[in-house]
Amino acid sequence: MTLSAATPSTRWCPFCRRSGVKFSKEHWLPADWGEYFPRLPNLISARHDYEGESTSRVENLSHFDKQFDGICRDCNSGWLREIDVAAKQVAIDLAFRRRMFVAAPEVLPLSASLYRAALIGMWGQRDAYGLPERRFPEFHASGRPPHDVHILLGHNDEGYLYAGGNYSALTVDGSNATAVRSLAFGGLGHLFVVVIVSEPELTAVVNEAVRAVRDAADGTLVPLWPNRRRRVDLPKHAITRETAARVTELGVVLGLRDAPVPRTPIPERVLAKFPTREALNQAVRVPTKQIDW
Image (cartoon, rainbow, N blue to C red; front, side, top):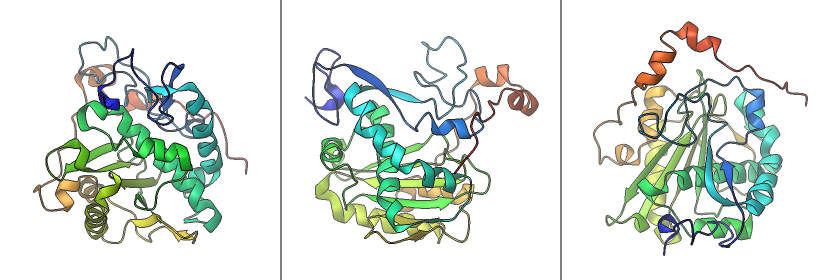
């Protein structure tokens, strides 16, 4: 039985592979990081899509509130949390453009945290797109991204570009097991991230996808990982919304689809509650913490 097919009675943690343990919800982006950012309401539902019949109200949640069930409590509150703690300062500095580089000793902590976010994002959408299942216990064993996983960094002027994340999967032979996957997200302020991963046997295909994404980005994305602990400087130019729309879809950058997927329209329930930009701004949650380092 695959992880994506497991039932509540047979489920096990995707990272440590233990069953019969206490499960919890893992935040996609660290909740305590969100305290430094203004949080827009009603952009993310942690439980259901707004168009789903089971959603009875508009939820006042942001991408920092987004959680996915099925991660064991020990992993959630243990080593996964430690990874995010180690990356917090550099991630928030980049998010606010307090600096535009990642020092050599910070490369591994930041890469591990962004990789964790990508795996959790994929876990949350596994029913639709499947998973690179072997990557989860591999990450649990090593605590670091493998060297055939690629993490690209950029920055965006407007901020929160693709804040909810965009999961793209491209299959080699039509099965989820052979998919090359990317998760792009810009919920960390001005920082824009693309993580590209597959099962270990597809390294050549992943490398081709990475080259295509970097070509489409035209200098607005730089590699963070793999890295031999060298300093990484962010690109001189910010990535635009139009360029981001291309690089977030593997089918587009590889020439298999003509145009980016159109942006999802704002759900009618959200428009009904916030008919104007002023009404939306009044509901924004202001930051509750200030940077003190």
